[in-house]
Length: 392
Image 1 (tube, helix red, strand yellow):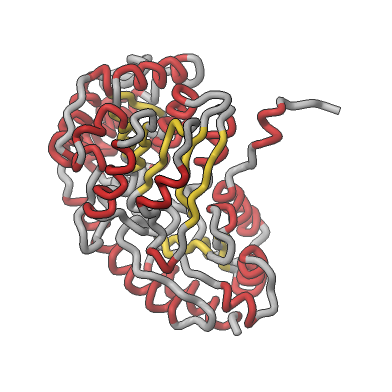
Image 2: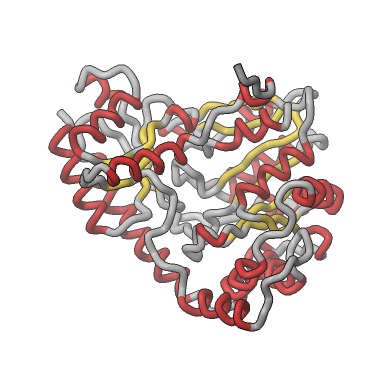
């Protein structure tokens, strides 16, 4: 028998990746599948971004770059942080990686170790806990629910912090819930963090520009400059510019932490794609009209799907503040349909309605289901019509 490392026995495959693979296999079998599982915009990458990449190829910019990103892209990232978040970073305080996922992985590997703890508000993006485990640290979960808008309180955070706490994950707007921390929310959390100087904050802002909630988006370091030397601001171009396949993420943070992340990257993937970096530079400094157009569509889809889900028997869904997910509570629907778990309901909908969804359990939220509305309105309407026919 082949033996893998003990570390891998603690790690689970990505649930969302598994859903994508399942949808692809079922389509290959000829089934008429609608997938509301993927967190991937249905929009094409804007033309001016694609053209910049083509020009880069034609001009021969196809060689290795600096491990942590080109100077031109770092200049664009500097400007973005300053203009959008009022945060100043030098080049050695910025790293560019092959997607925000790698950025987060680099952070965990560069910061965490055996005996450390990382606090993860639940529901959470599925990869956070396993990144922590791969780094030989321990994830500590703070449970939230629809009744408190899926946001942790200052009291919960205070109770969760121990002498071993090294990192706190903050994802806002959230995958999977669409919830966003307000200015007041963050200021309350900041008071706790200021009393605990050994805790770093991974601010996962990947959905920053996909936001329509009543309160403005804030990075916690913008509101509380005293925390800036402990905040790693993580972002990317995948979601808001419809560039998932280009694989560019980035982070700004303390120089020593960024240096450690660069070292991890130097011994794994090395530099991100040179062509993707050219495209990402154009995305950040070019015409932003495309972002506004996509945001308008996401907001319209959000309104539609939340209303429709709340009309389904046994479903309860809050209105999202951003991202492109709806996360209804379905415990009553489980009881109505004589089912035990959210996975049972997801499988029932797949088999009877041929709609792919993701159960809430892999996000740390049993009794919920994630709906992605990063698809066309036509697909969304068809999916809801199918589901409504198979739910009691």
